[in-house]
Image (tube, rainbow, N blue to C red):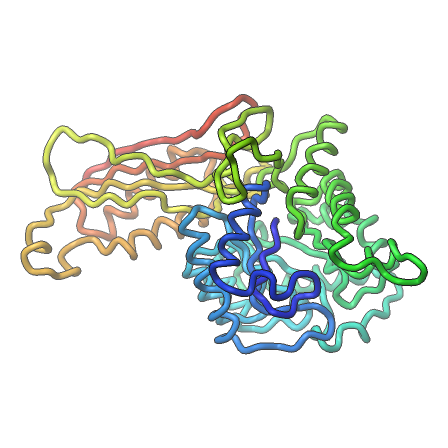
Length: 435
């Protein structure tokens, strides 16, 4: 998970990517370097930082989210605000990363429950301004787990599906140095809850303290090697993702760890990066590559950047609407890991209907509103798990025929990150249904 701060005051890179164009370009670089997910943030949550309004946060991040979502990136948004969470999900984000911890608002719980979006539940006490004074624990591991489980139960009671909840022990949030190390050593206890686990240690103060010289903590920019070591060890301990600033270093470290141990990265793992070949810049997608358990191209990432296929050829000249490349993270597949970890799915639609009146009268009520169609498909992809692509495609087709004035529909569901242990570029199922 690559960190993309669109902020002037983040602790390690504040101001570097505060402009929209700079942030979008940096996001594309992170993807090319191996990021599977981009975590976009518009408000610093470092200890002592000042809060901003949801309106200002959205001004900073929404254009970035929209542009990167259009490029096929899988996006997480780091926010404390329910209004921002709702806005970014509408703009194409897939995941809400909320570090409010015990201060989570009822409004945020309502948004997450209503949208059924994957949600990172982070342990934290107090606010960024007060958390440093709230780091007293009798047993930090027991108490952090207990407080996370209490919050988890609250979310589930509000209607959030348990498999949508990702746990983050909240390193640095109301934690002192030794407490962070204790939590990292206890990662297997967090993964044993059955939830995916996110680790965010990148460039944090406890790493700077570990690497101090002559009593001076190592500056944030000099902590990337240590961050990569944490990434590799976290992957070995079963973490689902690591949130990092230097994607390439952590991706390489995780790849080495898995190769050494003879293990496979999880679905939506920290990306296995490689160095660009000649002629490939940071904004250019690398050429295809293969290998066991590895992405085939940088455009694939944690959702491969799906290049929609051309609309299927049809034997007649019926009117039709083509809606291609609808993307969302779903939890479908025959393996338990697929139902726990999720992966990107993309859907192409060819909708057959008589468009003569709509064209003549210029009235959206006489056609299929493709914005509503896209939302319906997205909701079905992120909805209840099924085993087969065939089942998901069939359910989408039947739902669209029920809700919209279609004569027929052709649905293609792509699963580009399917856990197949041979080189492949995509797997998809196409079905055709008539009213």
